[in-house]
Image 1 (cartoon, rainbow, N blue to C red):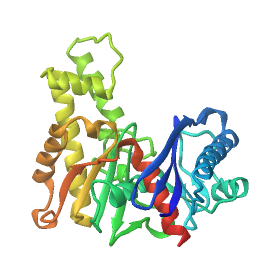
Image 2: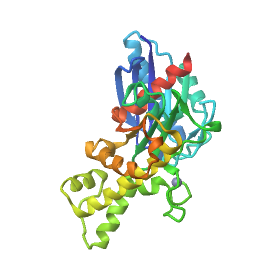
Image 3: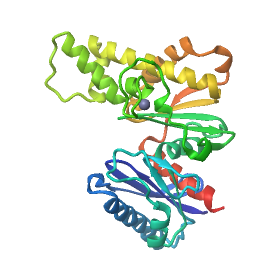
Image 4: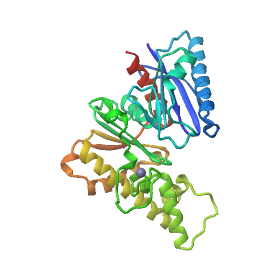
Length: 313
Ligand SMILES: [Zn+2]
């Protein structure tokens, strides 16, 4: 059995573990990213994470084949340098991340965009196992995604594409974090859902004492709270609309929806499907199933370990 170290670098925490080739996770840990302290601190934390996993492996007499790291932002085509585009980590651009970790930890390192590796994790070990053509969408603070074509991650020329959260829905829409307007992310992320819920509440004169989160909106929705129902129906519709556009282009076997909110229950996927079916070209969707991710917050580190397996062979 071969093992690899998988690392999922997020804005808040670093999740990492040691994974066998069949997806068996024999070690798993989490540590704070300290993203606000800048790139150098984050790199040192990543080195500690990899060394911890290496230490555990040593105690089990395992020599990992390599390390895979999923990072926010755009990664160059050699899978070694973070070019930029990650606003949640201060100074996270032009970082020769693979070289830095390799030097410090003496293991072969390959990196890729975090959402890409979550998608790869779901395709290798999760809900799209045995599928060759997969779209992955993660719904959280923003919207990220991955495209897998013929069993391989597709990144566009120079690995600069597949920003699935930034497909345009409205030419005169609301501003998006990317600098454009009217993107899927600006309408259908969890942040956008919370924003819509706030606006609708303010309009109706309702004021809620609690801090508003995606979880709270879901629980109010399940109690038939009228504003939560209205806000989530819009959320389902925007996602269904965006996914329909993507399926018209890629016609995958599965669209896997991840992110905390996707685990709310069967009703969540069911409602997105309902709107998806209204917008998609039926002939493009005959082979497409929409489903929830099954690896939860382990998708990133599992996909990262798989990325290491793929790159050391
Ligand atoms: Zn955008």
